Length: 399
Ligand SMILES: Nc1ncnc2c1ncn2[C@@H]1O[C@H](COP(=O)(O)OP(=O)(O)OP(=O)(O)O)[C@@H](O)[C@H]1O
Image (cartoon, rainbow, N blue to C red):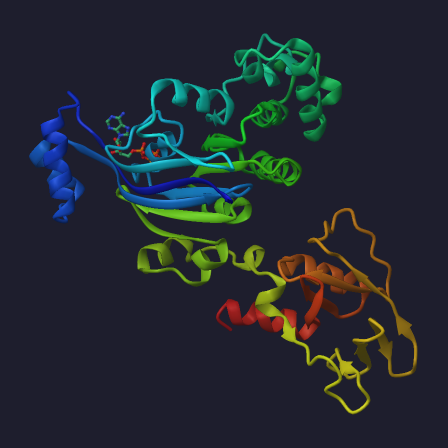
C-alpha cells in the first residue's frame, strides 16, 4: 500500500448558513453540469472543489497549481479535515488500512491531526522572541513531546538546514532567508509523515525562494515525507514536484508528472500554463538518450558509443575501450548522482539511472570527457553523447 492520501470524487461546497437544502440543490446542479456562477446565483452556494480525484503516493511531493480561487487551498484543507467533503472520500492510509477523513469520528480525526499531518502556512508563523531551537520545536511542544526528545529531533533538523550553530539565537537576530530555513526545519521536525504546505515560499524574493526550494529538496531526500504543496508558480512546481495537479474553477484539469504536464498537456488551458516554461530542468536522460544495441550487434562483439566510432562498450567486461586498446572503467551510480558533490575524473565513463536530469548528464559528459551511459535498474540501455544532448534539446524547443 503506497498511497498516502487519496481524494475520491470529492465535492466541497460552502453556504453561509450551511443550509443542507441549498447544498443539496447545488449538488444537483453540479451533477447536471451547472457552472460555479450559475450555482452561486441560484443557490448562494460557493463551489470550492468539484469531483476531485487525486492519489498521492508516500514520499512524494504533490503540487496543487492554479489561478487564484481555483480551489487549491480548499482541497489542501480537506486533507486534514479542516474542510469537510460534502460528498466523496478523503482517504488517509497508515500502511495497513485507510481512514475516511470526511466521515470519521472526532477522536479519530484529532488523533490523525496530532500524529500524521502537519500544516505549514505562508511565512511559517515564527515567533521572533523565541530562540531558533524553540521555534523549530514548537510543533513538537504542542504535541506534548518531552524537552529532551524534542531537542534531539529538532537539532537533527537544524543540522539538515545548516543552522546548528544558531540554535540558541533569537529568530529576530537571523536574516529573512535563515528565518525561513527555521520554518522548514520546524515543518520537518514534527513526526507527522504528511506535510500540507500552503504557498510557504510565496512572499519571498526570487533568490531566497530558489534557495529554500533547494533546501526543501535536500531535506526531503533524507526524510521522504509525503508533501502536498500549493503553488502559483509553475517553475516552482516543475522544480520540486513529483506530481503536479492543475486546477481550474474548483475542478482538477490534469494530474501528472512534470514531464506529462509540460509535454502532454490535456488541453489548451494547461498548455497555456506551461507555454513560457523552460523545459530543460524537466528533461531526463530517458527523454534524450540513444538506445544501445546490446550486446554484440557489431562484428567484434562491441557496441560503438560515440559518433566518431572511437569508443566501444564491452557489455561482458563492463568496460569501455578505445579502438587503440585503452580501457576506460565505468563508474556506475545506482541512484541519481549529486553533481555538486560527486567527483568525476576525466576518462572515467559515467553510468547513471534513466531519471537523471539532462542538466546532470551534460555536466557529467563535460567533466568526464566521455559519453555517458544510461542504465535502467542496473542494466545499461542507452547513452548520451554531445550530439544526443543537443538533439534532445533542440527537438524539445521546437527546432
Ligand atoms: N470557508 C469558506 N467559505 C466560503 N467560501 C470559501 C471558503 N473557503 C474557500 N472558499 C471559496 O472557494 C473557492 C476556492 O478558494 P481557494 O481558497 O481554495 O482557492 P485558491 O486556489 O487556494 O486561491 P488562492 O490562490 O487565491 O489562495 C473561492 O471561491 C473561495 O472564495
